[in-house]
Length: 483
Ligand code: GLN
Image (cartoon, rainbow, N blue to C red; front, side, top):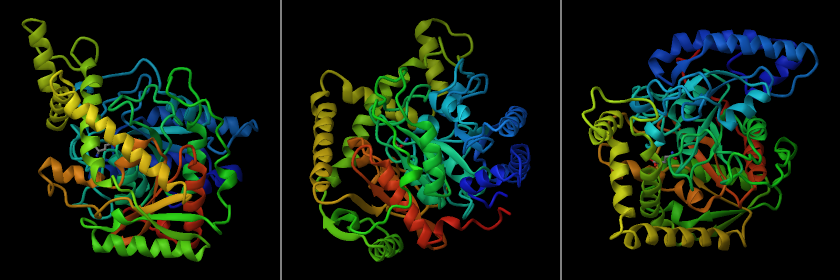
């Protein structure tokens, strides 16, 4: 059953070939057997999942089932779940039980989805390899000595290892798309504002966006439908109508103008990745698309701008973890200052501390104009590049990542880690939707094709990826050793 996509499982439930209880038990058995090696789940809520599955089966028997009723998934451990621990990959939230569910969690539960557990992640979603989790690294199911990507590495690895049909993720600079690429699955970062951030622990509020990760674009469409839409609890969530994402999946690609940025095929891109992505572009062309070379002249400034803005916002957001209100508190504080410094010193890991330091520095009175303000100006230029490009093309395509999954422990200096986000951060800086779909292999490891569209055009991305997945079968391959 686990080799079936979410959409196929939905059909099986509909035609009574299986039940939600059966599906949930099947996954729970697999998680028990395979998760210790992969470490994709940080917690499993077996009892709650069985109860929810039985409820879903009753809803179905009563004739009230929707497409997602009874489907088991996992939530990235950045989404607050009422009564179930939410760690955000950090020691500081080790025993934190949120008093409410994130809107994404509520909406998916309302659609009938059953949560199996919480997915491992880089601490506070800072990272590109999932090596920054307090709960241990996640291994890539394709080659266990490789990283799954980050920060939604647990979500990506568990979908790749077929430990759930899908998972939620969040993407601040690439954290849905990059791990999706490294693990050979499909993931979409929606337009900023499409999905409510309420109850999603904040990293960089002007960049963060939640989205689905699954085997196929068709599966992502079903999940995104349930996750999207205005939320009175998130004033940055959009009031625009949410289109029917599944309805446009089959649209013909004839005449679709695909922009291929020159800057994406320059230095730093691995040959194996370039070959797979070029082959994918050729497939799109065969399907009727028109390829057009374009330029994104400020591409080289994306990483520096992102790594000022994201830490600046993080340093502000993370000030709420002080030992007074949430989670971990140091032993025997002598006074208030001691409480703050030791709680934060003991509770946060190295990368989180680095970001807080950089962010606080960039925002400080003497440096604000030189760093933060400058980075915001660059952000506008990056966004303008896309506006120009979208006058000529309907979608922009290229590699999701410069390389395939690297070895655990291989990247020790922060800069080489940050360079993983070379092609992904621009969509966050501009608020645009981006999708990664599997498009081949290099050295036995998956390669991702990234598609970026104008704001609120998620349907276009899902349509292109779905058509591509009908003429290729990269998305259907699963790693050895996960039977
Ligand atoms: N790798 C990037 C970072 O470390 C992106 C993380 C993310 O998207 N959450 O900031």
